[in-house]
Image (cartoon, rainbow, N blue to C red):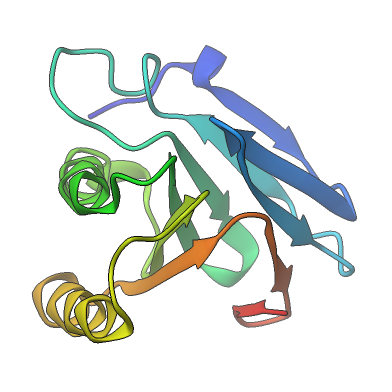
Length: 146
C-alpha cells in the first residue's frame, strides 16, 4: 500500500515524543538518525478498517515501530497493530516492534507474556506493552527501553 507524502514527517531530532489519548512514547535519538514519523490512523490507512495510530521508521538501522495508544482496551490494540503491519508491508523495515502505550494495562503479566510470544511467532515482531509515558532509546543497531 503506497503512503501519501502528507502522512510523513521526516526529521533527525535528538528527542521527540509521539502520543494520543493521554498516552505518550518518548524517543531519545542521540545519534540523530533520520526518522520518518508516519500518521497511520486516517492518513496512511484511511479506510473503515482497524489500524494503529503511528509508524516510526528509522531507515539507517532498518527499524519500524508500530505504535498504538490506548486508555485501557489493550486487547483491541493487537488486532489494530496486526492489520497495520500487514497493510504497510511496503514501507516497513526488517526489525519490527509493536508498541502498546496505555494509561492502564488491565492484562496480567502472564497474558502479556503470552501475547508477546504469539506476536513473535506469527510475525517476528517484538511486542512491548507499557503504561504511559515511557522512553525508548534509539541506538546504532536497535531501540531499547529505558
